[in-house]
Image (cartoon, rainbow, N blue to C red; front, side, top):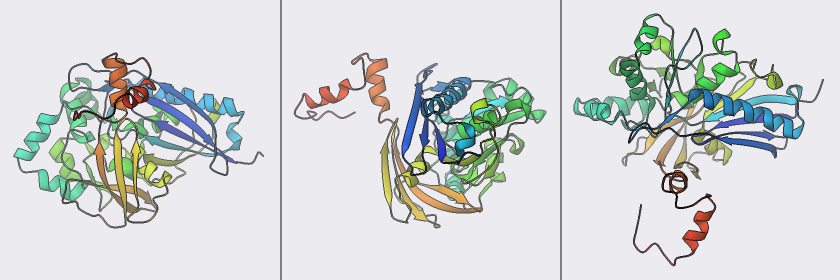
Length: 347
């Protein structure tokens, strides 16, 4: 029996999928990354192909193992971290998506949010979820799918509709898909849907009714710590347990060793996100910061306050792919250093 000295981290992000292999000293020994296409069907809309998310994540996992010459029997487990509020809908019987994923950046449901606020639901949502009502979160995205994708209500009526965030979609596929894939999410991802009572740690019936989301279409909520299920769909990972699940910013909070209340991290990726560990206390903000689940273990939750800037590294991608100002992302630094200051111009 080989020593299980390695951990594989799967990082499914907004612009790429990555896999990083760590040794027993938490040192990275192999990395694989694949970018994928961003879909912009109309202004304010951002979509991904769910199959591409799965395929690129699967391929990077295999690539990282091959690069290091590591086999499944040497892995202690796989951890999954992911872009959070992105909404995916699929057919339980076929395992196939019924539409593109609606990405967290997407603003198509802003009018729905405005109506909820006008109808006086703002305080209820804030109290139960810790979130400021916004199109950023998954609830109105799920509601939009149920209203605008013809297949969705038909599948829901037959208890054959699955709604989930990216972690749920990956775990479902890793564990067999339509052949009995595991349908779960962890509390950190659930806390980003605007459907989850973060104090009680459950889907909230009042919020489900408010958004018109059927409970049977949502995954079971589990701890951030596993093991939860074994991987069956990738030969190179067969039998390896899924041992950890966390939304990308919560994973970064503890990855940056903010393990004590009051410790803060800020990370720079597609967007820029600040999280402060608040321990076992939900701390309401007076300045529109979010309260969110930082992790759940043994059914007990730790919390964080969060502030986000949605466009960070994504602006570099826009300069490159949208405006054609640069050919490679690295060119931005030289351009920035070529002038003494920003001349008072802010984006």
